[in-house]
Length: 132
Picture 1 (cartoon, one colour):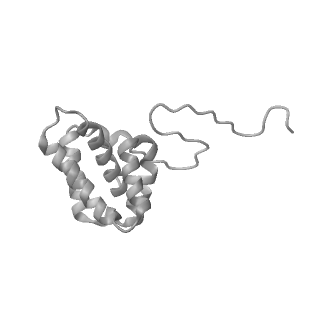
Picture 2 (cartoon, rainbow, N blue to C red):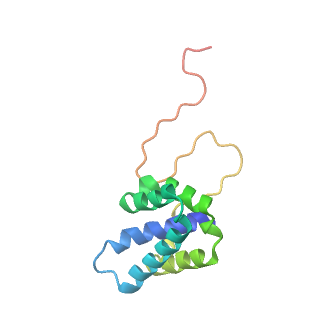
């Protein structure tokens, strides 16, 4: 998994479980630790901070914005951020199902691709019927 995806997946898993009152303090601390490391990278970019805040309220919709913020800030190159993301994922996703969920390798030409949960898509390829 690439570093940006790792960070976003860890935050997504963290957002989901931290809302649960039964989650232990260790998981909450791991989530807070990853978030605070990202805030350090986002400190001078309000749009990056907004991406993180938006992700916490709606992870599915804000994931692309957060991924862009992580990438643009260089947080994916910080060993401390990566270790915090790995640590959080290890606690909330010990079997690795979240980490593998959107792992995808495409080789060759692709005419259309949809990835994610609960999608509704219509794809039309080629010319409409009746056109010549």
